[in-house]
Image (cartoon, rainbow over all chains, first blue to last red):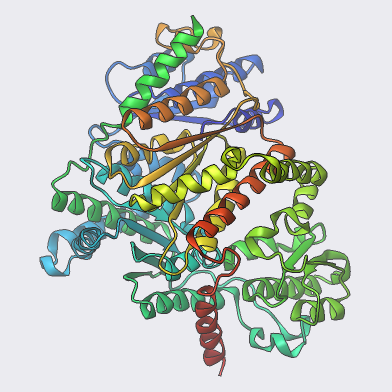
Length: 317
Length: 317
């Protein structure tokens, strides 16, 4: 996120020599990105460092500001895939280069995505998970459920919720239509949101995601807490409790006649995350088809950009 | 959040000697908290460390599980304020002890809160900000705006959004009533959510929060990026761009006839955060009054807890 204090902490001079920046902009002119790039270049030069060695990026082809800056500063750019922007670029180098740097095998991510796509291309229509998901979401939207909650039960998928939120909101929020994606996280949001989910209005569709074979984490052993009230924890792992709580929330929602879908992943790996990324992209694109909406544009975002740019140039005069 | 892999990383043996745990539970028996405590005690004993020196906590008075464990393990407990639970405990030691450890002066937080309370007690009814806010929220809920978006424009207030989300959802989501709180973050969610906000259905109330005197962050200087397309950035700070973008979003929402409230804080300090915490608690309590709802209970949360406990004891047999 663009934040002065956060970026200042990041540009700490002592760390700068060991810091590399990746600048990504398809248009090559996104205001927040250009601002961060300019500040990073300023800090690198002030620290006497070679910008060519500390910055690299991904930019759309053709002449654009990011290409001009890269040429002057001498840093390399990878090509941004033509025609695949923003929320849909996660399976291109835009998403996979950072994934690679964090130790995720990009090939496995693409393989997972490819399997979800094969399923879409080859299964009978009534058995395509993304088509069923899209139909379900649209049906509930038609019953005045204008909120769609995505609630994974693992920290590893928390950021997936933020990507999904953009995917769904920005692709479908047009022509006065679209439902509001809400990301939640289990089990913590049982303490935060479940009162509203069970006791509030019936205006939401719930999507719980669990992972079957995820890392169970530490176990509680008797010698550490030998009091009778905690005997139910003896030898149990955190993962077991999380799994029980996910089923409990699913059951409680069902018992209260709230519409709930349970997506069970095998595990949280590059492969399975690639699969679910493609699944949700397909589900969103099919939903857009059912709503007769263009999933790929975002016309309303421009309005704010124009106002911000006007404010910036006015105040500098 | 309760997550096996996250907690395993936290219990890394090399770090354990330098780690202190604070366990907080009003009831003294919250499942997630007891599980984490048991795992922490197990790991500390395994590492040969003195649990009395590595754990402390806050627990409700009277006999409870946390008190029993603390007595056996020999670690100290602070008293949990009677009658102030969960989402409303942020101004007691539950919120202020962690704040103190992170360098925030708890006295200044309480002073800020006290000022918001004085304003509530002393101002004429029609001028009390929390009463006006509550009336506005309820009025929009009555016009089928069942979603209330809280969008601060600074990373420093991102977690405030999560606290507010619990406060509003859990206090008001009862008897089929309550609106759905959604937390957003500026400017990043301009790229993620604003298409939906401007182009989607008119079912949301927007609450933007900015801070007037926050840390501006680094500036972009001409010598770093001397190309004409970036001349608008010369000498400008990240903070200036963020401020311009906040006004741009506010203006775009207004121009599209979406209801939007702008809360401007002076800065982001313990004092101003204390003020806004109290403001939102009062706003929520007044809204509950207008809705004829008990703001302080959360009856539906129990249902899931009972199912989870049943699943845990069944699978252990």
